[in-house]
Amino acid sequence: MRSFYYYDKIDSTMSEFLRLKDLSNEQISVRAGTQNDGIGRGDHIWISPTGGLWFTFDVVHTTPTPSFALFAGFCIHHCLSLLFEPLKDKLRIKWTNDIIYDGKKLGGILCRYQPSKNLYTIGVGLNTNNDIDAKLGKFGAVSLKQILGIEVANSFLCRALIMGIEGQCQHNTNDLNYLTYCNNQLFGKNRMAHIEISGLEIEAEILGIDASGALLVRKEMGEFISVHTGSIIDFID
Image 1: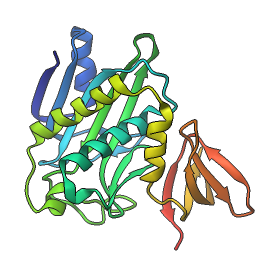
Image 2: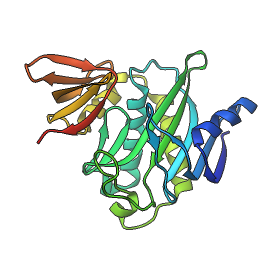
Image 3: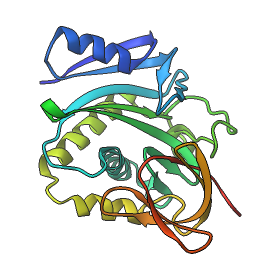
Image 4: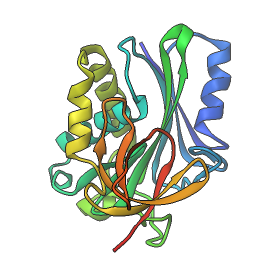
C-alpha cells in the first residue's frame, strides 16, 4: 500500500520524497501544489506554477531496461492517451524525458535508480490546470486545461499515472515493445535538429531510437551515430 503526501507549497517533491524515504521504507508519493526549487534534468530548474501536477514516487522494476526515462515516458504517454481521447493524435514523446503535445511541452520526467534495490525514483511534472507562458522553454508549453477546455483532477491523475507505470512494470517483459512505441510516437522524427552532446552542438537528422534507448541520428556528411546523453535544442526549418 502506497502512502500519498500532499503539500500546498514545498521546495521540491524530489527532496521531500528522499527525506521521507530516509525515515521509512514504505512506498510513498509526494505531490505539491507548487515547488519553489523544483529539480529538473541536469542543472535545469523545474518550473512549477500553482495548478500543475508536480509529484515524485518510487517503483520497483526488475526487468533490465535500456532507458527507464523512455519507459516512463511510454507509460505516461499511453496512460494520457487512454484517459483523454483528444490528446491521441498530437501527443508525442521527446527523447529522452518530455511529453509533447502539438509541438509544445506538456510534461517532463526525471528518473533516479538504486541498483541494489531495483528501485526507481520518478519525478513527474505535468501542465494540467496551471496558466502557461506560451514562450516558456525551447519549444513553448501547453496545459491540459488549454487542450481539453476543462480542469482536470490532479489527485486522480497523479494516482492514475502511478498505477499505469506500476502496471507496465509488472507486465513489461519485452523491451522492444516500448521502444517500438516510442519510435512510433517520437517527437521530431525525420527532422533536422541542433543536438547537444556533452556540451557540443551538432546538426543532424533524427531517425529514431535504437535498441539501447539512444537517439539515432544522421549527421550532415551521412555519418550515423547513437546519442546516449544529450538533448534536442531546436529544429532546423
